[in-house]
Length: 494
Image 1 (cartoon, helix red, strand yellow):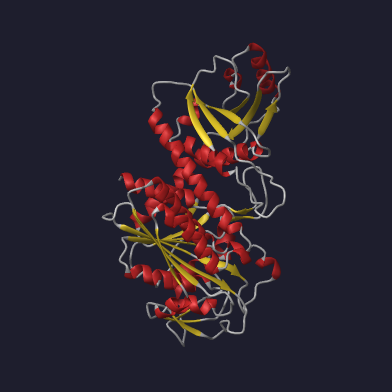
Image 2: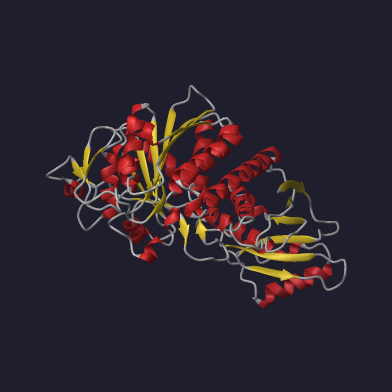
């Protein structure tokens, strides 16, 4: 998609298709029109109350005579609270509706109040671009079209910096492209993203961008003593892979380790999931997809940061060699784990990846995983659970989240609840008591970070959308790609 920024007063002829975004508090949207006849039409809409300007609400005003413009009123919702989150949602709604068919040039008039919110233009644009790619990867007929050209029209005034706005738009394009790649990886059918194939897909995209991509096969994983990854993969005919990423935008910068859970399909193993609970388990590699996509954006933008990525990839299946309850695995750092539920497998492969990441002595670690249904029960489908052992790193992640509107909520690393992870046969069990499942999983992972600054993000809820809506597609969401990119950008300018 080509994006251009134009400073204009709209005093001349209107574009062929003009989108007018409107906040609920803004009741003077007819001021965007330059001719009295159209002003009267827009005034009539406002006075009728038929258009409420809610997030995702669109009203089309088609030309009454040949040669006149088509106008689209697009609701932005209330300016507060959480305008940045609503900006992405409103942009997605605009892009989704406009993308229902192939279009040429679309113009969008940016309200001045939107530009008063730092980052709003970027979030709105990211939403528009992201919506140009639907979830129907396997459909015979194409049902979503990216806009060929988007012209963002801004009324000039002294407070605007064109270079800054253009930088925001460039960041939006790069980030949205990476986000859509993450969504595509998640939405791929399981047979099309076995661990080997997913590793290859990641390599083929990231290596040309200058990201170092190293792929370990099963023999190398065994030599590296990754007992968790080997144990989980033992029930599958598709061998595991370990993908190591590195971006040295600034080799002297403190290294940030990003670890992403990559279970390409999760049957639950011998602790078998019900069929209905398996339907969306192609999304259990969302953490790995988000990390890989974030590397794509950071490398494309050429950000001066030092990132390392660790992506353990496996299936969790029920073959003859599958883990059994009572088995004991030895993780890379030497800790032994008694297996009492094979559906608590993500923490096992993350344990190996975290242990290896710690050995490389990063400044901090962030892991992302669709880890527990308990987190989804606690926080719902729109918010990720955040666990942290250090205030400064937690604040950096929360700040990045606030910039995008990708919500996180801190949950406690409760020491008392971790007692139920004790095992009489091994150093620990992979599950604990009945309550606090998300906390128990985080406490398990904490055993493998060796006290380094660490944030664990349980993205089980927001990483997948069950239903299609005006502001979101069904399927993978790529949740937290945008926030990780903002984190990298804030680190590179600190």
